[in-house]
Image (cartoon, rainbow, N blue to C red; front, side, top):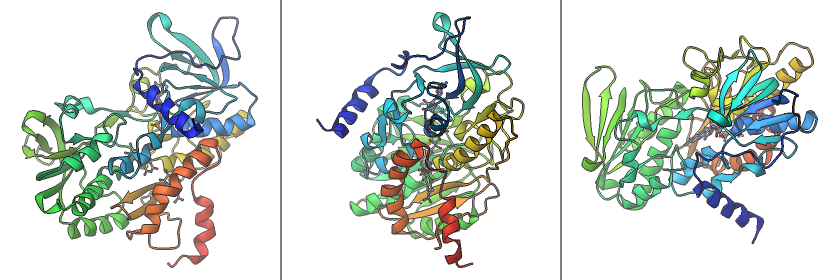
Amino acid sequence: MSYRKLLLSDIHSLSRRSESVWTWGTRKFSSTRSNGNRHYKLVIIGGGSGGCSISAKFAKTMGSKSIAVIEPSDVHYYQPMWTLVGGGMKSLADSGRPMSSVLPSNIDWVKDKATEIKPSKQTVVIGTGSSKQEIQYDYLVIAVGIQLQYEKIKGLPEAFNSAGVCSNYSSLYVNKTLQALKDFKKGNAVFTFPNTPVKCAGAPQKILYIADQYLRKNGKRDNAKLIYNTSLGVLFGVKHYADSLWNVVKSRDISVNLRRNLVEVIAKDKAAIFEDLDNPGKFETVPYEMLHVTPPMGAYDLIKSNSEDIPDAAGFVDVNKGTLQHVRHPNVFAIGDCANLPTAKTAAAVAAENGVLFRNLTNFMNGKEPEFIYDGYTSCPLVTGYEKCILAEFDYNGQPLETFPIDQSKERRSMFLMKKDVMPEIYWKLMLKGNWNGPGTFRKLFAPFKKT
Ligand code: FAD
Ligand code: UQ1
């Protein structure tokens, strides 16, 4: 069997395992203190985009076995690919790799869930009840991502057991999206955006445009009404790209309703109930043939409730927006979706945060002050069909910060191919190995060719 096939069969058997079974990873702890606690110079919580890529950077510069990554999952998913999985352009297996294959080989993988952080004792607790254990750190990086909260919508997640209800946001439901498109006969195809922070704020509408193109290609578009109900008051947060997206919506005959929040799904009636956020208490029932749900999301309880002095008022890790250092605990840093950075939460943002965090924490370890500043760079490849994409890139101020010397607010095939074929290579081969800090270098190289 080829290595790739082995990996895929590995992923399939691993993903069938119960999520609630957490055991110690196969790699052993390196250092044990006399009090029985485990101690590492650097502990990283989370082995997703942020945890994996930052551990790879430090694994190159720190002594062998001085780093522990706490991560319960067997599989690491490249979530940005799920937009393409939902549209039938990639498979779910394409988007996953065994966790053991993406974490650096010279770190200890603690295959468990962090349940508490105690910065006053420089300790992370793993497990619960009698299996509770403590791991001590000199330095801590928090990279646990953002929690999906389907259960906050009445009728979910049960409605996922019925035909037509799908969501690209979870490995459990993403395959239902293509199925819903294949099964579509006649009626409303409804797409939602919740009234909470989200990861990849473009993804809820990428699948709307892909669905439009799918239904056109398959001769079903005349029987379909496409509805995008978003809790936001805008189609996209940055006007430069929102203007283009409004043109896409109008040219494709898509209905957009702003300030509409999904509150209930009644699967037996194929009905979705939305609240009008400008008229609280006013509800509208929308019948659906297909319903794509972007779930409410929020900070994990680990940060929000179970970590003394780590969260801000909203429950996200309270870090300095420039340095990524915790505002009260200088030996604690955060990266990615769990941090309270006022930028769009994306893997592209994580890439740019990586370089800043690595240099600042390295400085701090050497007794120097963190001095490198993250500018909020984030990027959202707004896929608008099977061959088209608007590549949004912007900073904390919502100012476009584009890499290429072309008008990126236009739908382009080149940007689609970059999203589909180039970005996964960059992710697996560069970013997760600690060698991708975002496209800043290319932006500088291309700057002389940019028309102002
Ligand atoms: P994650 O990658 O989610 O990793 C968090 C990790 O922490 C997970 O492995 C989890 O198991 C672990 N964890 C959670 N709780 C605990 C705990 N208590 N103890 C230990 N470990 C824990 N980004 C882009 O840049 N471009 C895109 O086109 C794009 N499209 C997207 C489309 C979709 C449908 C989705 C869902 C996301 C998309 N993103 C995109 C967003 C991107 O995937 C995330 O922003 C990115 O993965 C965030 O990285 P992270 O490390 O913060 O969190
Ligand atoms: C990016 O750096 C990145 O991180 C790996 C992504 O996540 C998947 C992206 O989607 C994008 C668009 C970028 C930005 C990269 C370039 C080359 C513009």
